[in-house]
Image 1 (cartoon, rainbow, N blue to C red):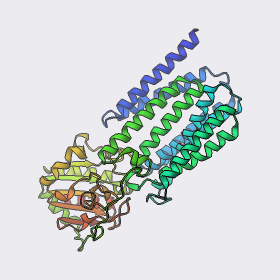
Image 2 (cartoon, one colour):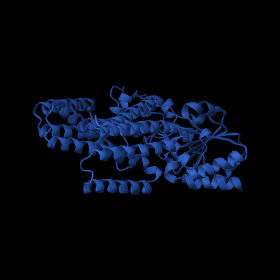
Image 3 (cartoon, one colour):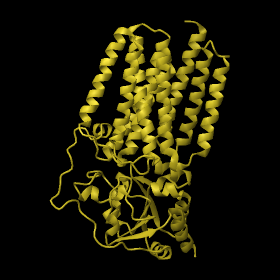
Image 4 (cartoon, rainbow, N blue to C red):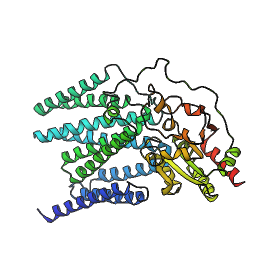
Length: 459
């Protein structure tokens, strides 16, 4: 082992340590910026180390790829809004899958012949294909280009099993004969499987899907690392794959979901029980409240809990919400935030929005930490959230979200729901919360409505 090889191993080791520190930093809001910086430095070291051992270091196409990719990435980062972050993440996952598939085919055309190498190529291409098409469909669902409703085809589980069997058969043929047609056949089946798996998942479970696709992209990168004999890719892929899987499991537990049911679109889950009278239908009219009246109510309150949702992100109302928080706290009101695990379209979506607006971290609490406090809360303000505060999850066994833990806002003395309309949430179901006697609706765009409340409070 010469000095150059030792330096390469040290470079990859340092990059791996920085990636671990990055994940550690991203685990809390207070250290997230530092964790992000660790990840950037680690990636720069990994890229530099890889280029140092490449004989084509001076090849002009490498410079074009690096500079072009950096420019595109910077352009996308500058243009994307917080509401578009979930679909951007899903699209980036598809890039990882495409890269893995292209690397696999490049090695296939390089005439590899050893059985271990063939197996590595096959696994990488299959996982990459599933990740690519699944991520593209997730992007389309999250961006509203296709419906978020689950597509539950007849015999879908049999179809999944049949496609998995076909992939295994193609794998055996490919390992035996090293034929490109076998690899192409497996690629096609895997692409269809990726679409089918994500199509069968409903809108309420999409944050878990994004997390699972993140895990898939990690395992894809790890498989590519084995193909290319690159330690940095193996380490990075394993970290991303395992952390994404753990996060998905944690989120499923918080939602009272089986991770297998989410991944396979309800595999093994019993269908909802049919009620003799059908699903409970909300009755009565909604009660409205104006911004000045809400301001007066808030001034007379002692405990207020704010529940942010995707509507807050769409309206970019996080800064107005932060100002509302500051004004109320300045008047002696105890204000806290309740964050549901799947609020928004991405794990931690609401936490990122509130951190961007400089809302103090110590008043932003997870569902398990604050759900028991609603009975002693004077006012619960729901801003652009729907499914995560829907009592049908507890009361209606026929509901698509039945059994999913929700924030029990209806137990507060007064519930204010800020929405532009009474429309259904991402899961596509009505919300009986709107019709409860202690609920009042503050209709309008979240940013505009909250700014009016703040102005009334200051007046």
